[in-house]
Image (tube, rainbow, N blue to C red; front, side, top):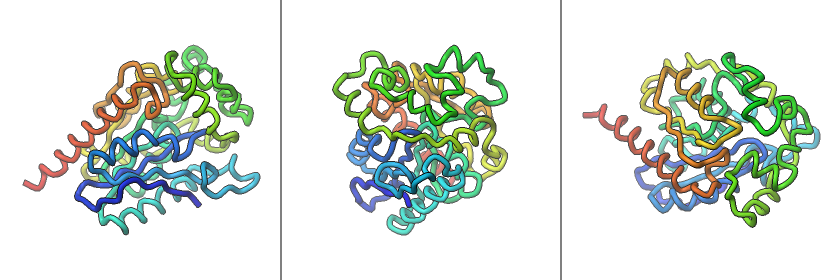
Length: 282
């Protein structure tokens, strides 16, 4: 089972926000966003996927949960939110969490208000059909092979490696040590393999009613895990929808020095989408 952190149940007319973490992380990584968005009137929820944070752990299984099983986690929380708020949530997925969100949308697009993909794996996969191995070797601090093996925890095994992978060079050392201590020691090899190449049927998603009014894609200018061209690839794959690149922000955009710049972009795009969706009523 997954667990959920809750901030500010207000029962007002804004859709609730559901934040979904990526690899190595858990619900804790959204601490900045939970307070910031709740202060602007949103009910906020951050979930820990199975095998992460305070969620259920199963020995010898936490490295092999499938994409579809993580989708079940999102489904259960979305159902909980609809029951308790009577509103369709906006889901926000970071990195691998964005990949899981996309898989969820294949069958459940009608259950959400919008989807924000933040520094997310593109639908074509972590290599994708248009990416070569040289892309990874030149732009990623660890090789593709390291990412696929159990030893990929080496990517985040020290604060220095965490900084190179996830944060900008000027990231505060005290926060770096704090976040490094919270990272998960296990890596889901099966999930990495599932999302290596195309893992989602984008036509199913794009054929959904109001698709263009619901999808938001955002990346970080300094992200070396999901670089700008991979973010732009997501936009192209989803029919050329607009993408936003936040300046001076690395992969862990929600924890970065300029995390509030990221939050402001997300808020602006959400407001735009809500306006587009409401305009059709008039």
